[in-house]
Length: 415
Image (cartoon, rainbow, N blue to C red; front, side, top):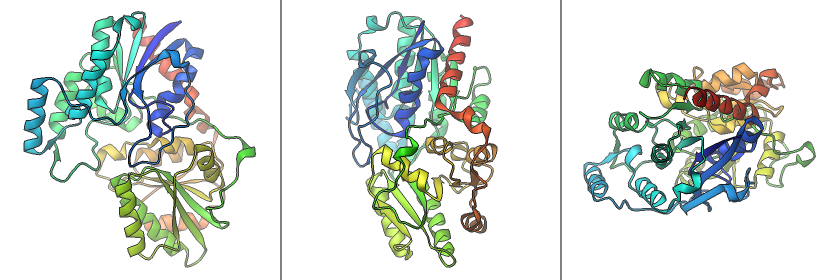
């Protein structure tokens, strides 16, 4: 059996979407020919978020190397990088590829890692974000003489919530990314839209899409709402409230207010932060007079969230409302896949040409739109016709793990 080393900043027991990509797929790798090993951080709760530490690890802890503390700010040790960071800070330039704390974390891992312990690894997967995993994959690929895959869960051009005094220099970020990925054996994005963008950027590279996928982690007998959820019909959203999601959230909230002129349907939100955006959301809801319609609840354990999702009238996905936002139009939040196996429909607040909208259409699970009239009509007229089709099965985590292993097979076969 071949051995694969997955380098990721996010991994169980931290329970969040970023942890689930390999935190679940690794559990299927052996079935398809690969013994997984993981290089990650020591996990703990994330400040300002409601993420819990209750996700089961898919592999034996002895196959997991944890170096460094998640969330700790590591200062770069290199004098050149310190100087470069100071210059970028002075100029107000933000780069995903040169975040000082991330570079410092890479230096820390490189200093502490025992490379000899990975001597029989056949292939490496370095995940982005964060970019330190790509730096480390490059380094270990060179030291061990084995190929590496750059797994792109986001694009380098995405930035959300950076301080106002900084401006993201995307062109420079892409130049540095091209240097980082020049030795990658393949690039694996998480959506078709990302794949199209990356193929234009790397026409000579092997680029294969592997979706995040869904995993059923709750049985029918566990279904049941908490006392905090209403007895009436309710729309349901659980997850992070990024800056760009505030706009789509408020658009939906206004539509739900209009719906309530004809039928009482509430909008339930279980936000996992960040705290600053939770505060903005609460202020906006209060100012718009939506307190009696939109209900904000505390984060809960995954089993409770899943049961509330299964009992919801409609599950909600939030993304950009701007069709010219190329990166977010190509993004499919991991939450979308998790909702696919449920019988209830999905409403995504995102332009109709987005990858999310296309996925919902393919699987017959709902609609993606920013048209207020369509949103209101959908909420009032959704009578079970969006319960899904057989294509939902092709997006399971196991199917995606199998696809990943076949990609690794093809890379190793070419050597």
